Amino acid sequence: MIGNLAHWRSPTQLSFKDTPEDPETLKQHIRDVLENFMDKCQVSFKALEYDIELHDACWAEVTRRGSLVESDNTKRILGRFIPMGVIIASASYRHLPHQPTKVFIALYTALLVYIDGIFQYNTNDIKCFNERFVRREPQGDVLLDFLAQLFMEFDHHFHPFASKVMLTASMDFMTAQLLESTTEEMQLSSDASLFANYARNLSGVSAFYGLAVFPRELPVQDYIQALPDVIMYCNHVNDIFSFYKEEITGEQVNHISNMAKLGKIPKTEALQRLAEETADACLRGWEILKDRPEAYTAFKAFNQGHIEFQACCPQYKLDELFDYTVPSIIV
Image (cartoon, rainbow, N blue to C red; front, side):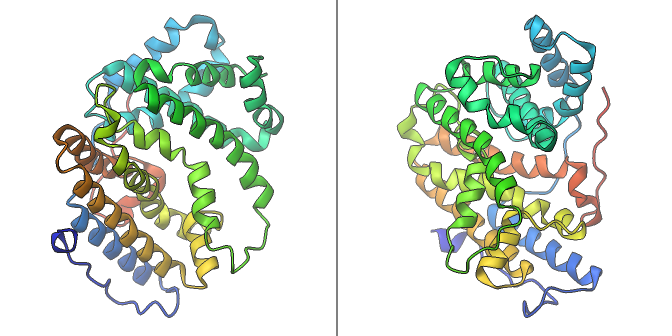
């Protein structure tokens, strides 16, 4: 059944012998790969308007928590990151039945983006986060205290099994900040073929975002066998759709660059291989879930919503590849 759902077309104008230097050829190739991926996964490229209702609900939750974020400066900092959380919660997870869960996902994501952005300026507190969390000690940063509190609330919104895996994945994310800074100048061994996936899974919080696809009420046995494929889709859609931005800005520390170095192939070929593997994971997930209608429907909704999330992210510069306007964030 999987092989019959879609047929992979070869992108035009590129033999993969070399990464193209001509910008228009590169753009056309990337556009072809993305369109092929969307055809195979039966999703469409479109963007949603910014969800002001969810945005306001996030700030209402911040206010309800009171002293966690009491200073105007802290609120200004958090305000820079809440829109990213709102976008992913309203697009990728709009199928979830409970608004408080979407608020939780939005705030959790905002704080992870904050950490990703401030690591180089606050390495000590982030390095000590897991130890302080286990000991229930103050984190030395108000927003890290906020995140630590969210870590203790997974079971309020998700299945008890899921919440435990989510906690482990979240702590792995904090550890991954150290890995990325430690290995940035490291020479990759040609024999370390599994390293790229290991590093990506550690840093992607993929178990959290994969398990969050399924409402708390669903029995774990309805979807657990598909979870590895859901996680792969969740993780690598972002790698695929952010590749254009990373390539034109010269970024070298990312999953596709690691794949290319380890495989000794052009990055454009690594992009296509990852797109094929991720699309195959999507189809396997459908096949596994086909007899579990609620889980199947949730994953299908996430398939489409996660593409819409990519389209709503202005930093990916996808409006240079597709004819559309990135929605404005008006609050």
